[in-house]
Amino acid sequence: MALPPSYNGLVEEVADALAAHYRQWVAEHPTDDIHAYVIYATSLVSSIAVSVLTEQGLKQVALDYKNKHGYQESLAQLERNLRWSVADTPYCGDIQETFGLVNDRLQSMVAYVDSLEIDDPAWDTHMDALDSILVTALKRFRHTELHDEVRPMLYVDFGDMSDDERLRFITQCNDPDVVESYCVSLASAD
Image (cartoon, rainbow, N blue to C red; front, side, top):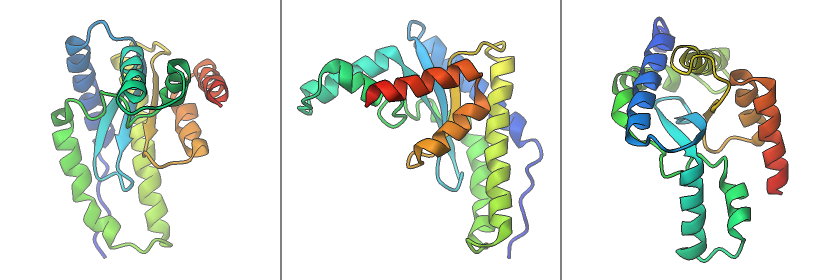
């Protein structure tokens, strides 16, 4: 079995990469209204990117679905359905190079993960450590870069996760009012 990886300094590295990404993204899209800033991770956290969810991007994607792909729902319904879809935003994985060093480090942990059995308690310990690192980095990013503003909503997403798993990350990263707003928006999409 490979030796467990070192997590030392990883929170700071992720938070710094988030800040660099955010500053560059905002400079390139100064008029976009961000409603969510999301770490989009692979299932084993072997790499991360950011999905930026904006009102402008949401309207663009809903219109594309309607006009180019023939969806029958109204634009308003498509917007409700697509609001939290990290993979459908036009800003999924933009400026990926800002995560190069972090992703190199995360990728180097894969040999350790590959050496574990799925029922090995070390698997859960490792994945819990990475989840905690990403959440802590988002909170640090909110404090240092967003100056503790409650919006935009921040969270970690793995793409194929359940609504309950997503809500767990949203709850860990945001004020209760933001969590409530998210839950209300989901209910209105049904």
